[in-house]
Amino acid sequence: MRYLLILGLFFLLSCKNNQSITGKYESKKFNSIQNKSNSLRKVAYTTGSSLKINNDSSYEMINCGNIMKGNWKVVQDTLFLFCKSNEYRSDSLNAYGFNGKQLKCYDKPDFFIINGDELCQVFKEKQNGYSIYKCLIKRE
Image (cartoon, rainbow, N blue to C red; front, side, top):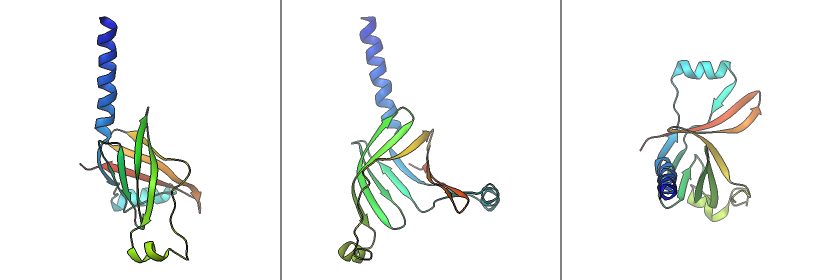
């Protein structure tokens, strides 16, 4: 009986972890002092991104130029996004592509480190001397 109780508690905690990750996330915003500090540290953050994580394990990420949809999975402190579709936000680009090329999903999943209500990833490391991060804050 004790083992069933422990197993049930473990199951509930596992579900709670996935439930708490669902919601809408948006790019982290910085004030002018924080921006100056980031610049001095050679750190840059992407802006204009939103991520909606649904209860049914689906997601939608919108960036400045494209919309990605797929499924998500949490493993320990990491959120993995498995892309199923990647489209331009512009209808004309979807019809004709950019320089004749259409967007594709990557072979490997995108991932974020979960830190409370914040999701972060190293987007590009050391581009022009800067490390570029994508950090999203839970808004809903």
